[in-house]
Image (cartoon, rainbow, N blue to C red):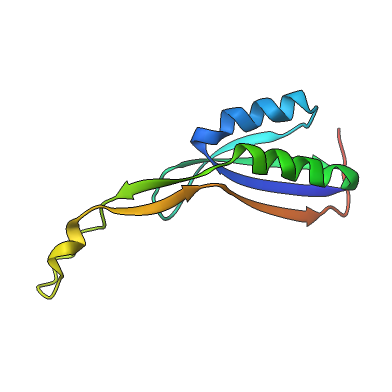
Length: 109
């Protein structure tokens, strides 16, 4: 058995959740916040049999898309600051960060 921890952008979470339901994959859905852009994420915790890991990873890959987003860098009051530092820059967000961990024991009470 494996534990899959998948961190996806909120924009992709409902589609992934529906895919999990259709594929009979049970998942716990947690609201989380990313540290870089401080934007909303959703973290899915999935306990799954070893032979279904690739199926779950394929669902995550299919539904979690990377996209460009503009952000304005924090303003630093340093006099040596470049004038262009206050303009928005495009960063790539989204996709999924996925961890697959071995499970030593599983209990359901």
